[in-house]
Length: 188
Image 1 (spheres, helix red, strand yellow):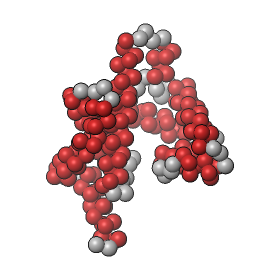
Image 2 (cartoon, rainbow, N blue to C red):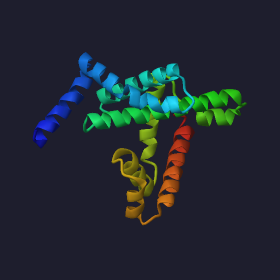
Image 3 (cartoon, rainbow, N blue to C red):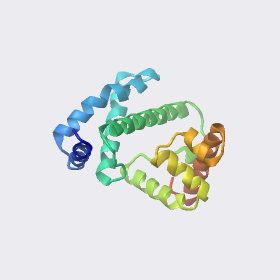
């Protein structure tokens, strides 16, 4: 199979996802189930927790593909993104469970609130997009390279002339600054 056939096959997978082709959705759901659920099971989750998280993550990824927010280059990128979404959803769930056990101040609650509904998520994403523009050039570049171009921190550090630890700290600071802008605007 040459490169153009491979690209055409991948486009077909993405198109099938966008148009809700049942066979493709079922095949992808089954194919990535074990890999994605493994993280939840290894980190204090039950089989039911894992199933719930996987379903939420799969629907979120599928929706992002349909809306054009995520365009996987191939099926493997779809699977990697799905695993990452599962991991993040499980981490969020663990935080929610932990916060239920501990008293939380009003200020902490507003800063750590996670959008629940589709409308809240859409509003939050719009707020992030608006406020992303208000970040400094370096922050925008760093976050773009890390999250959109999927560059490793080591590569980003080399390009900016930083150590890898500095790149990690700068990424944290940039995300914190973005979160603060979103919260200040009232988007979260």
